[in-house]
Image (cartoon, rainbow, N blue to C red):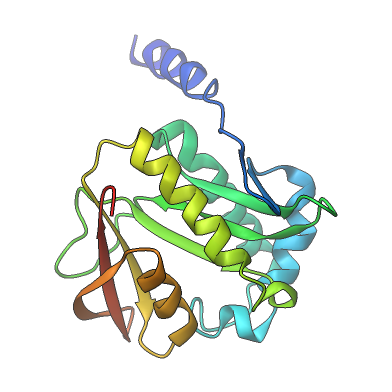
Length: 190
């Protein structure tokens, strides 16, 4: 009987649709299998992995990360979007929300964690700000949580600046996986 319940629940999970968000220059959409080459290439860029994974991801690791991000939506009702340029249709990164159940103290329980990552060729164009603001506007309308957070490596000045521009404020410093990080929080509607 429990197998039947699991299958029933799994089939209902699979029907969740990822909303498409559009900005002036960008489209935020669901992950697709054909995004994989661009995702793997992004995670091999030193400027991308320096303050995140600390090392380039293998194809297997990049694929697992892509599947994890795509799988957030049906399980949580929110997740990460692929960010693509509207003019070219090219993959330029990802942004969105998650609950990664991180082993961090104090815990981030009850707060969706926001993240963003963009390919190096678009750094400095304002795409991250544009994508993050679109995702936040969506979350303010659709998520029940009153607070969200992000975790940023202390040396990642560009991401800290972006977080501050988008209403996040430092709430604590802690260590995560041996690295000093800043946890920033944002109140809904701010």
